[in-house]
Length: 166
Image (cartoon, rainbow, N blue to C red):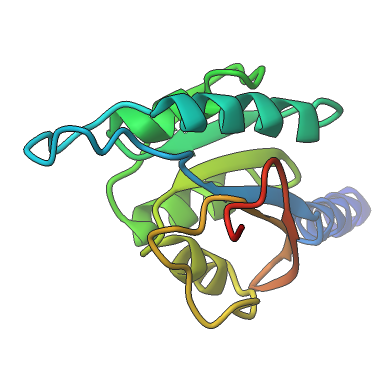
């Protein structure tokens, strides 16, 4: 009976330790896309976008990522190309992304490449407060770092690379 109580106590401690871990999630909008062909529904990055990707790599050079998530578009994958990431997973919707992070990557460091219309929604879905009212189609230089613990997230917003608001 004593062994069973000890085992149950240790199991509860282990479960609490796992659930209390902080997950770090970095979220960035994809870099500038090539707008030269309005018919292209999946454009690559523009030359300016490629420079921004290099700036992103410099900004995050000391961060070690466990995993990254990108939508199936070229521009989100290309935004992650300069980072050292062991595994990139496609996501199709915010719910599946958040569920995967909260289920499979607790205590890890995660990178997410998203779009102007989903970045802030992802922050909220992870339990953070929207740090900006909106992101416009011209907002490429923001990066968000979230410290996620259970259903709450602390959000830091910064800018990197060349400011686009010139």
